[in-house]
Length: 147
Image (cartoon, rainbow, N blue to C red; front, side, top):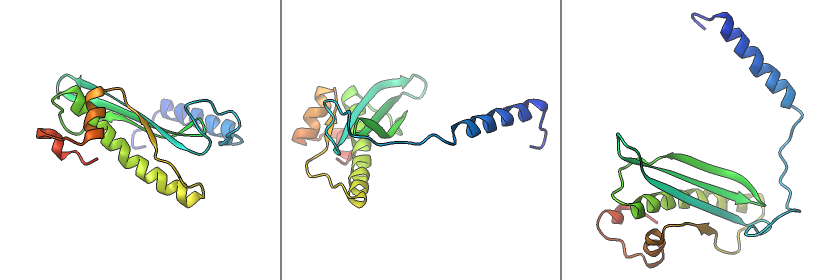
């Protein structure tokens, strides 16, 4: 606000009008219209990564989404913190990051009164990553990723 201009005041007014307009809206978490692969009250995750999207720093982008009752309640889309040497490693890093969020979400669900009785389904599209996660034959650089 040191050198505020008329444009700053205009932006502030736009934000305030927006907030006034949505103050009566509410989030609902309805399980009446659930479609497959969603199951009422169960956490579901989708994970994906794209190898070396940042050409300068050679970092991969990754994203994951957690769903309950056909609605996204937690997500992350970011560049990875480390450089991966393959698509499999990039996908495994995204899967490990998503797994941390799943643990948090399962604990939250337990506190809210709907415990997760089955394991959480995670949808991943990289066959190398799936093989590493299922058989835990981590070698080389992949050993540093905690599943």
